[in-house]
Image (cartoon, rainbow, N blue to C red; front, side):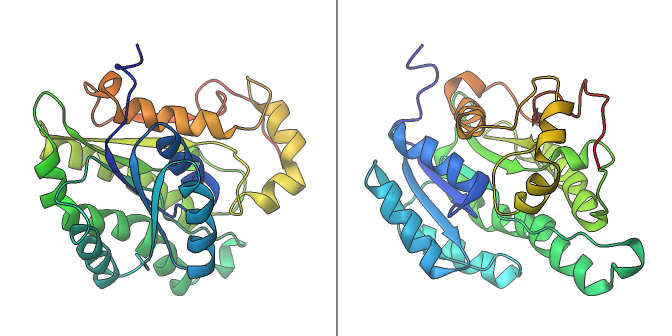
Length: 260
């Protein structure tokens, strides 16, 4: 069983890995023996998180802005300078926006979709040579996109561009899965409520109600997120592709209560 779920020795890139869900995933891979790179826009956060994770295993940090095609190209080039293969790409970097309907302007839509959807597409595209070098039909390379349950159901909050972007990530996941098989699998994790900067305001206002509305009656824990990513990246997950995995305590799949 240890071998079935092992990611030891795998090369892994986690975007948006300096905090929140990205850090949860990165820490899981680091502590299980993978060679991990994390990236984010802010150098101080990258440096601090890299230092923390490097104390537990192999972790290097890179500063990158994935909101543009050129930023994605630059990050892919930096990874190619450090390794000739990439076993796992975790596309986690993302942005959110919430405001009343009348206040959602073009700039907010472009900012959210540019990073959440175009960034996922372009980075995957530029890293294909490294993923193809790592993947075989018996042991494919893995792309894990981080979507959201807001792309599976209608959110309570007015996060129109965010929910639309995450639904797009889920469909992009399926499309890429069809195109890149059999040497690369592409799956998505759709998180529910987890402690993160992106969720901080929502959890402060509605945290107890959200937990009470979840069939499992709690907020997600770091090991819930890390465990799902490790499963998808390990031999245990090698026969899954095009799947959207909700990690939300049942909120989007069997929950019926609402909050707010």
